[in-house]
Amino acid sequence: MIRLSDSEREVHMAALTKWKHDAVRDAIHRQYLFKDFNQAFGFMTRVALYTEQVNHHPEWFNVWNRVDVTLTTHDVSGLSMRDISMAQWMDTVYCSMIDKASG
Image 1 (cartoon, rainbow, N blue to C red):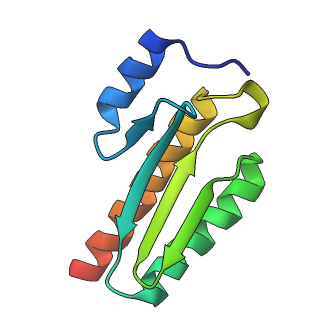
Image 2: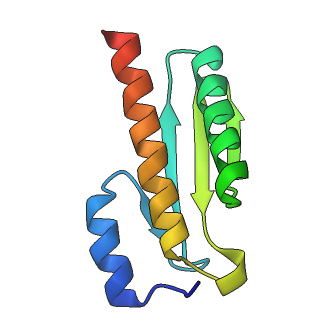
C-alpha cells in the first residue's frame, strides 16, 4: 500500500465531489445527513461491518442525524487507494439508504 501522489489524489478527488481534502493530515472528510438517529446509526452499522471485512476503519463522529467521517491511511501517513475505495463505497451505501427513504 502506498500513499497517493498529489496528482493521483486530484484525479480521484474529482469524482468524490462531497468529500473535502484536509491537507494538514492528508485525509478526506465528509458529512452525511439522515432523517433521524436510527437511519444514521443504521448507516454506521453497515459501514462498521464492511470495515471489519476490509480491515480499514474510518474516524467518525455521530450526533443525532449526522455522521462526520474522516478517512486516511495511518500506515502510509496519508491518503491511499483504500481511502478512495472506502469513500466511494460509503457514498454508494448512503445513496441507497436515502433513495429507499424517499421512495
